[in-house]
Length: 298
Image 1 (cartoon, rainbow, N blue to C red):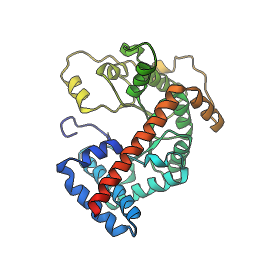
Image 2 (cartoon, rainbow, N blue to C red):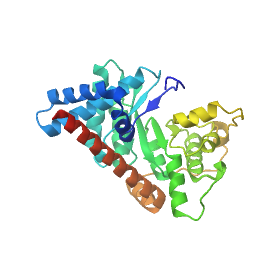
Image 3 (spheres, one colour):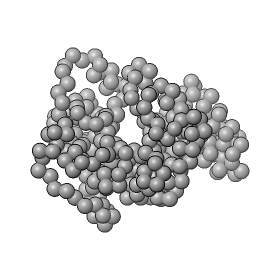
């Protein structure tokens, strides 16, 4: 981040788990463990408090570097619990406030389940807390997020490609035909056509071609490897997405009720598979992180 100077940055349980095992972050682990011991009365409470503290500490380190916002993810195991997700989000915001960071610099990441989207709607409308809806793979999820008035969505380009490579006969795709690129392009055009304010932030890239094919998208989350590759190339970047061109598309507006959402998601095998897989994998890494903290508490 210091090298490439991004505007914003994001975290997730898997990235936190990786960082937590690096020696340079040992002091953050110690701080979180001591915080958990002090704030919790049972071992379960202590681990939970330590986890929250660790996420906030990493977020604070990032906010010292980036001028914009950091995304902090709500526990994937709460993906189907609206009220628990709201409570966790509000707790994160209050913990950042205690460290001197205003809620305007925080994005709460929630899985794009119906419950997660409705939690975001309430957080945005009633508490002024900005949300980043993640693990988004299908058009129904994107429409529901826009109608809920969430601040930002993170459609996962590369994971969509992964599914098509694994489940169809076609194993390679040119950037403009990449199913992940096509998905984000469709979402972007729909949002701009109908005047939704939700920001589209493409994420999870597998190659620089995908990134180039989405030039013009509101925001993109790009890993260091691809930032370096793009920085070292002299090939010009051509803008593919724009609000003006989006408005020219012949698109039909969709109403996304809960019943419609659940049916459309059910009919989209790729989105259903990748959403459930993403939740499971984030949950697994959260459990690993809890076990590591519990060991350090002994």
